[in-house]
Amino acid sequence: MKLTETIYRDFSLAGFSEKTKASYFGAIKRCKAYFQKPLNTLTKEELKNYLSYLINNKASEATIKHAYSALKFLFTVTFESSWLLENVPIVKLPKKLPVVLDISEVTAILSAAKNLKHKAIFSVAYSGGLRLSETVNLKIGDIDSKRMLIRVRQGKGKKDRYTLLSETTLNHLREYYRKYHPQEWLFTGVNGKDPISTRTLQIVFDNTRQKAGILKEATFHTLRHSFATHLYEAGVGLVHIQRLLGHTSIKTTMVYIHLAKKDTVNIKSPLDCVLKA
Image 1 (cartoon, helix red, strand yellow):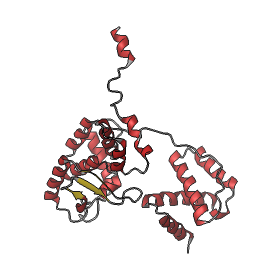
Image 2: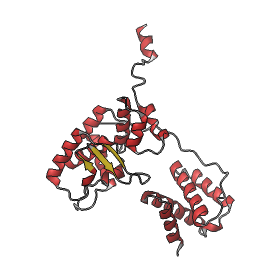
Image 3: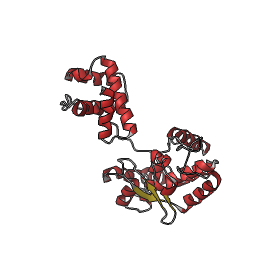
Image 4: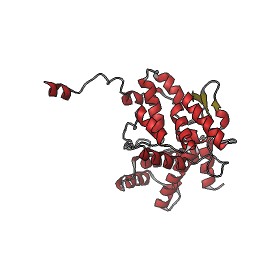
């Protein structure tokens, strides 16, 4: 079995998503191109020099982290060897708070989406706090109009879950269904058979955001962050939000404490007091 086939086999055994497989294999391929020799012959110093090379050439911190994780997996799993950089610290990713839209801004985006399919897609994503990949992989049967729930099949971490379906979204979906008549996938691409692509939705969302006059650097994923933040501001507990989002750890969900304005809404800046004095 060729090394490439072995690597992908091990990726599959580890349960990696297609996105993770591609990211890790790309990192391994770039390392191989750098050294031009079998990777299982690399020494500790060579690995350290390679990571240092990435840092010095201003590679993104995400790229460096992926390189470290991919090579660690390659050595410990595929090569069944020890990880030579076990005690070598890796650069830490900056902790940035995500962008959140105000409810009025979400409304503006939905209003700016003149295409019925796009309006339905944005509405579904915000209604249930869905990831981009989860949105494009929805099937008609995943919309439970009787229980007012959306079933997310095999979301991140290959977990099923149910999340919220709003009345407004259901109305958008019914109108969309009457016009487009989808057969299996809820939102199809131009051929009418396969799911709409994630790249297409990213472009459509950005164009709609600009039409709505929103200057924030919002992306499709911002709808998910906004959903969670608005729930927390409305008094929904973090545990419930965690389940709706499909987070494994409550720590991931706790970021919305910092994004919500409910704990600061009654606090005034001291500058206002100074100006009134």
